[in-house]
Length: 432
Image 1 (tube, rainbow, N blue to C red):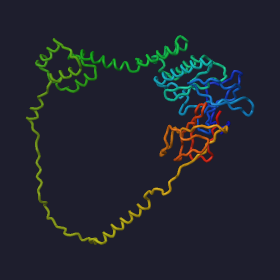
Image 2: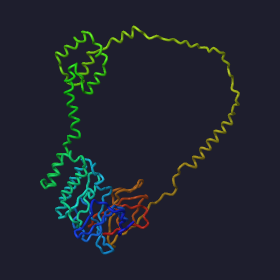
Image 3: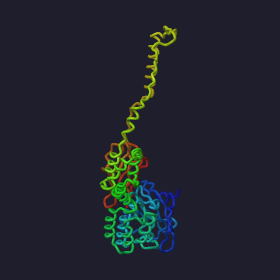
Image 4: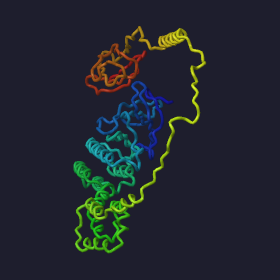
């Protein structure tokens, strides 16, 4: 594995198109890791320019620029948020709510970049890193050739991430107007907040309208006995009482049905319609038929005494185990169980570990920093969120494992590191 200073270059980052500087030289981009802290980073080389003096919130922050040994320029190092992934993993399948959050975050980032006189020029889904509802722009500030305006690049990227759902997004028109410069970012935010309350009609609207529509239209069709009800509930009402509909073949059945046709009164709901059908068609006739033909009963007499003579087997001929022998067997069994429990029962260690001490060194000499505990391994009693030591000097840790720490120094931005304890070589902190 190739290394560049304290960074281990794991693999090249695949991008849609080469990143070319303004001088026409292609840039190599690597996913790497800081061997000191374990933080993931991106490394760009070779870059023949100085790092931007302004940090834009919403873009991957630049950490440092390392001078290459071959003299071809410098290597820029950008920090990656823990857990962030390229947005191209969600091509054609990104949820609408996530897309809305990413649009808001990236649009505000582009406004801040414009205020800092910075331009990306090549926004693609591969160059957007996301984690949950957060989104970051990668490579902002690189001296590269612009391929297209940033707003247009963001619009095309969101369209690719939405896939087939792009046409159903309620805020699609607002984003297109913003990309053309017809809306400001503040107006785009207002449009997105209004559109998020509007559900696309192709997703959940028709289901509600179809259900509400069937509640009013189907009872009107079911009021006429000659027409079948097309609704599923009407079908269940017919199948629940098929026999009463077939029985009235004489004039009485026609006379009972005639008033219902002459003076129809459409019910207010399907529930009342079902009640009327079941009340008008009772079926009391099967009961007398059951009484006229009672089922035959079969009686089986079981004699109490068997037909053969019963012989008493008497006492078993097997030898009886003496009581003392059974007592000996039980005693041996208890002794064996006790011995196994003594051998395999977990015992608390008589020697308790006193913890671990890790030496922290600060460069340049004469400077100091504070170490704040962010996360501790399971079983540790150290207080999370407190300053545990001021370095240089030894720092005590009560448990072995991985600790996430934050280093703070006056006049400098804090940085985080992952420390695996025990660390016999200690930790070097370089203040720049």
